[in-house]
Length: 120
Image (tube, rainbow, N blue to C red; front, top):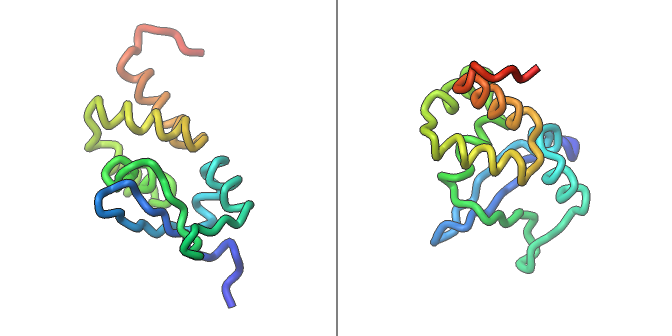
């Protein structure tokens, strides 16, 4: 039998109709302090399932989840397609869900577009 950390977690988006997204529990716990705290509470929805409702849409979460669960190639691919609004969205989500590795990627991108500033 698989352990608790091997399990998948279902996120329910704010899309209309809602979309369910499945992601590795261990990836969420490792990369997001907020999700780690939520999962430690072992919350259940009113319907009795273990889905976590989130305020974002599937499109808003796509890059964040790729960064959390994807391999290096998948992460690089997700970042390479972002426009300015995509980077802003990713920065907000990295902050909201306390994803330090994603936040680092956003910071690296910010410094790459303003190289004249000394960020050491």
